Structure formats: structure tokens, C-alpha cells
Image (cartoon, rainbow, N blue to C red):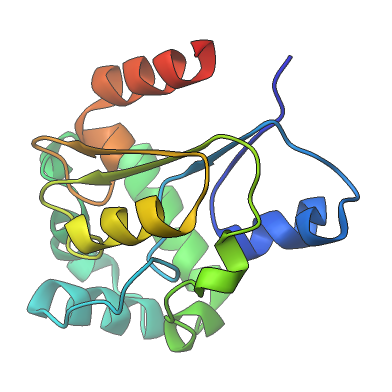
Length: 171
């Protein structure tokens, strides 16, 4: 039996109270969200495009934004495209755009459960330094880089991501 959490670490602590030992998830899978990572995010035109879009969503520019996050943005379904746009539009200016700070060592070194951290080799937000810090800071971590994948790992390489997660869970 697994308790799995995937997503932003701050939400993990808020939902599960890991620091307070309220609940003990057995597995944490971090897909490294754009608002929290292990290093400062390197400025780039794709990142600026994403931040600008988050502040002022424009459906005509969404394709450009998603192409910065995925190596296969052309394969993103119209339904997802529309949901992404509506979600960003409804959220308004996301506070997370202004809170893009790296994890602190203190915030992750107490994670005792197995942790899986994956990034894409074409990720505009995360890089190998993120994985190196995760290895240094988290006691029971497994890291990996997915080839031919951007920030949207599970879009770009769904079979590979699923295989790695299933192998991680079986061990």
C-alpha cells in the first residue's frame, strides 16, 4: 500500500503535515514545479514568455508558451490546451510567479520516505544542478533525467515516465 504525493513540496507539507508528523506518506514523487526547484531558474526567453503569459493569459500565445515547456507541444490535445488556458485565465496573476524561490536544504532534508525527482533534458526550468542538490539534501532520493522531454515530462515521454515511476514504486 502506497501513499503517493506528486507536486509542489510546499503543498505536500501543507496537505500532509510532514514536518508535524501528522501523516507519513510512504512515497513522494516530485515533478519539480515551475515555482519550486532546487536552484534559481536561469532566465531565458521561454521562461519570460511563460511568466508573461501567467500574468496576462492570451490564447493566441499559448502555443508558444507550451512549446517552451514540451518538446511535443504539437501533440497536446485541444482539450488540454483549452483547460490550460481557462485555468490560467481563472487563476489571475498567480502568486507563484512572484514566489519562484528554490527549496531550502532545511525544507527537504527531513523527508524520510523514498523520493523520486525527475527532470527533462530539455527542461527550461530544471537542470542537472537540481538533481545534484536533491541527491545531497534528501536522504532517500532517486533522481533521473528523461531524454527528449521538456518540463512536461509525462506529455513528452509518458511511457518512460510511467515505467520509471512503476519501477520506483516496486522497489
